[in-house]
Amino acid sequence: MPKKIQRRKKNTSRTPLFLGTGIILIGVMAVMLLVFGEKDKAGSNTATSGLSSSPSSYSVTPVEVNYAAPELSLQNVNGQIESLTDYNDQVVLVNNWATWCPPCKAEIPTLEEYYKAHSKEGFVIIGVEAGESEAEVAQFIKSSVITYPIWIDLKNASLRAFGSSGLPNSFVIDRNGIVRLTWVGEINREMLEKYVTPLIVEN
Image (cartoon, rainbow, N blue to C red; front, side):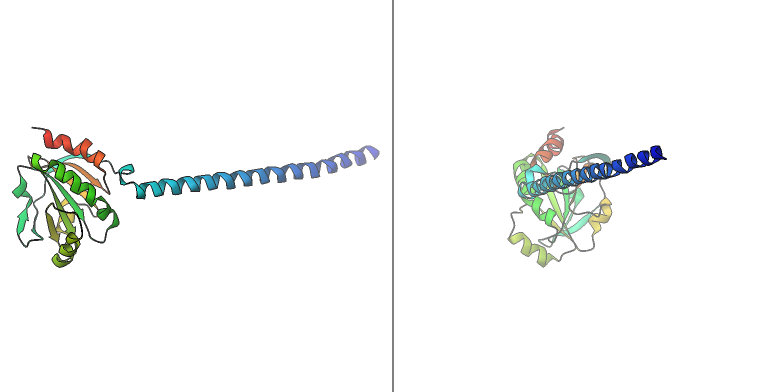
């Protein structure tokens, strides 16, 4: 009996020690989670703010493809009907966009700068506005930097022709009428120079 009583006393004395250790470990883990969670949150916020404040720090990467360009004819902002086949001798970047789309508007200055830099080399950008009226698009253009051709696409014919619904999306057609590059989302100048320029200068 004395031995049993003594053994029980030893086991009982260990219980608070285990509980105390467990509580301490839980507390340490909670503090670590809180600290690292705040660091991750801060890092995420920093990265996000960096993307929005510096367009050149973010860009989608074009995907290389190889298929015949679809037939597409639409009215431009000047009321004239144009077709992709009118630009067969040029490298054409078709950019599907909308006046209400933030990333679409964000990449316009980049596209405009690239267009001005390469337009004399047989390169053109055709901005196809998805869904807005001619008057609305014309009003938007007046307050923007756009000088490349803009087409009006009230019924989203371009989106259906290219099989892409996300905006902005872009397709690059070479001088032989073959779609060579495509991407969805905002692109920066570095990516344009890296992927599109070689198509402009190739024979």
